[in-house]
Length: 365
Image (cartoon, rainbow, N blue to C red):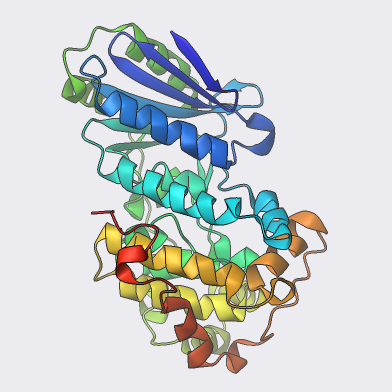
């Protein structure tokens, strides 16, 4: 049975399996508010349905099912809504983060097939999965500093729990990982070749599984061997990205003569200096937080991204303009240099604009 609750999301129940296909391939399945609402409604309905024992989720690619998972939130909508003063922007983040929490705490197996691009909001709807499957086509990243944002959707929580200083490295640089690196970073559970995914999906929907554990066990039995190499510069990552400040990190990279250090320094110099500092603080704060508290903190932070300054001075609005609207790839960051970011500018992002009882995510956890 297929329910066209929203053309951008296809939901089906086959046997005892709830199947979700993100169906916005031209936008690489970027999440709209409607998609977030449909996912939430569907997952809550299935959580209470004894006939559904597990949920599987995939993305529709341009050539058919699979090939792209989800490129994140709809950043063009963010830009338009910010300039229009559209309340839907605030609703989007409140509802998206509540969905992220629902997935992380879901009472049934939730299996994410992270084939193709998995970024930002795509990580938000997959990192909480009980089984996270990657393929040789997986391109995984949290690249938000590139648009003057921060790794949200629980990014503080899951990045801070990566081994060593990988969380700081991935959050600050937005480094794109393939399957092997995703597994090394503990952001994926197993590898399946993309050519096998259609048959695996077909087997899942046509097999009368006894319970959710049986579904999950069978998927995990399909994992292929993948030699998981360490990140090439893993020792350097753990040394450099442990430094106390962004400025120290960049100075140590720029003082090193090897190619990796020089390239990484160059990447950081192109990101928003303010948001680099905010992200480092976010990840380190989140290390000691529950998921619910991290999501509440991120909800405060994203409010400030659009409201701390006037729209024309917002780092996020400017970052999206440069990448996706005017596409000149020349954001005018304020301040322009890492050296000029003040601690007061950073700490402002962590002051909640709401009383605890009035917080949009007060009920989480």
